[in-house]
Image (tube, rainbow, N blue to C red; front, side, top):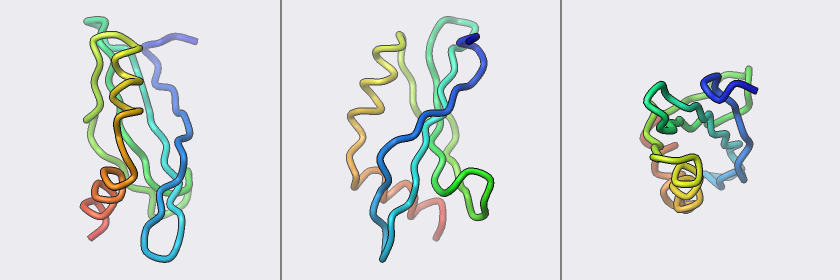
Length: 85
């Protein structure tokens, strides 16, 4: 796989209101060698799937995944709420 091509990975779903919202992260390596990514909320291919901009960043791939692991449920819920309300 070409690291410059975005890859999508499933994350654990986040509880919101009365249900679970699927969460995915799209990651890619930039021309400058850094790693960037965005979050998708909802089921792929179904409305309403919403996404952030490329808010995730890492100098290395390990740094990128550390920033993803540092996100807690309340961060993801707040991001989802801000995109849907």
